[in-house]
Image (spheres, helix red, strand yellow):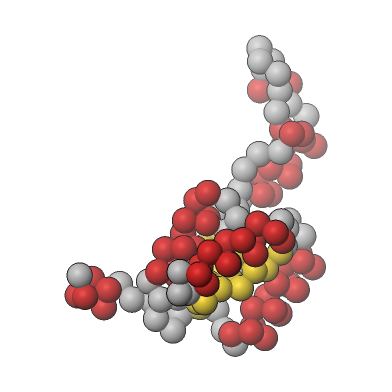
Length: 128
């Protein structure tokens, strides 16, 4: 087991996980921390980001909550500034943010072609 820890160690690396408050992003953040990385958890909800960070720290890791919406450039720039001020660099980026929005959903039986373009644009921006 020690061989695997050494082989896959991320000791000293700094990672940022967008969507780190979600199920998949959260699991990736925890895994990166278990492998030794310092992990910045970026998500829209401050409380959820802090809860994920608290769990990582309780397990012996080092983590930082960065509340930000990936669709808001000024929030991302503020998050970047905080991360660089705290740890000085970024080595690993995991883009786990994504999903759907109410504006891009239809009731059962409706055709995809009835979706307004304006409703789809933010979903495409979020997932690309």
